[in-house]
Length: 630
Image (cartoon, rainbow, N blue to C red; front, side):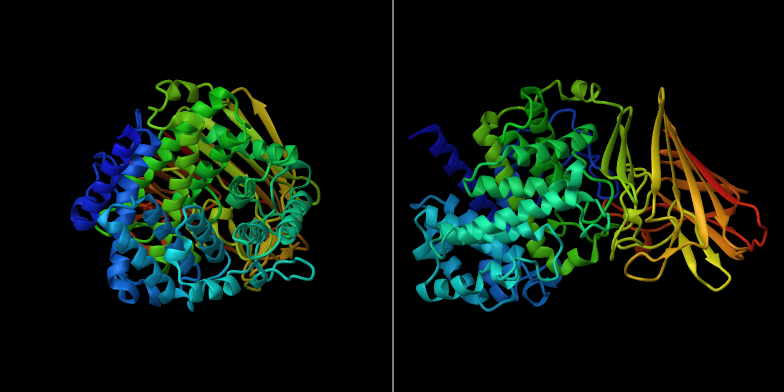
């Protein structure tokens, strides 16, 4: 018997043992610093990525799937009845999760027949359930995996398979006549292409649709990424977030799955995403700090892009080694920090955490399965690349010190400027994104043009309050904020100091789904970022003698024990030492896990609120703040 066979059998024994004893599976070895209220551990060393997947992640996924096969439609997870919770992707996520479990079980194992029967039952049970877009892709991928393993006809009855052939169709969310998306953001072009390609691989249609959708995907990416190569999340309104960087990674993975080559253009786009990510790598496995759908998905975005780049030889040999070292940390962090043993689930929603409404707890089972899949398939790629059971490079921490201390990444220039400035201050990563345009997200704090830094400066998913940004109320009640109309952005380097200046001829009038340009006020903004210190100054000019009724600004922080006198606040605990505001009067208070002030990683611990009264003078209004940090 080969070592690989022995290893597989030992692993499956561990899985089955976990299924038999959920308490055992829910008690991984966790670093004492990995409390749910903190940032998680610093990984000076970390296990090989595949070992974390095989000994910790897969056994826990098996616990959930075993529970599903027993409880079926009555399954609950941390109080949520998962099939009553309106998760529109759930059938597909269940299908692919069960496919992994079934395929990885040896045919002579007693559990194999149980899993095979369970797959047929769950397929029968969910065939009429809502299953949209990503769910369609997951289900098609699951069926293709089963087909390649020679299990499709055994796992899915002919009747159900015939119905799935009709239901699992890209035409449900793309107009077949002109290949336009039906009320969906642009990243769904890649989903449609993948579904069409999988239908071709399953023998359900010819290759023409997938080829046309791939061309549409790349044409659309080319059109809305412009000269800088990052996808606008909108049709040219200028919103650049995690998806803008991740999308080319998703496209690359779909090409890898489809056994199709990546063009030089695709590789060039992928390299641009790599260049944005590399200065953000760290010892904790933390990912994106701004935009929507961050937290653990902000980390798997790095995982997917870097893995695709490694597979497509977009990385240098050293970068590939270090990308693997970081990927191993992302997966270890998933189990140490994001998985909550008491919930028996990934935790995006409880103990001070908050995620975007569309990823609400009603999706709890699906989030467990889709996140697990991201770690499973990227780990498999690293295994193929020769990193299986390989201890991540011991020189990773030293290599981080060689990364550039400053990087300016442009997304768009023209009527409005879009960019992100990335700084490394010792072990700290600070991002200043100026990326806010288009409908639905402009008022939400994760899209504000303010500094973000894991564990120190953050926004609140779907949260609307003046975090580090002046909000002006006019006499007629209109509230204006400098959000979406940045122009003439300049980034100056003075040794260790970085100075960012820009202007806005209009402010964003709040209260609508999309930004509303209001020219009654204009503003010039200056940021100065230097080691241990960040400051912002806004100089507002009113048009035509507009009366300013009030100005307010807030700072919700992870630091605790605030003491405020006038406009100056000092902190007794945490990374921020002080926060000083000029032009407004301030007060502070502690926070105790208030829903309004929860972030993806945990709750803010203090709040500073600053206000200024009515102003009728013709001169400019200046509001500035400065924070110092450890």
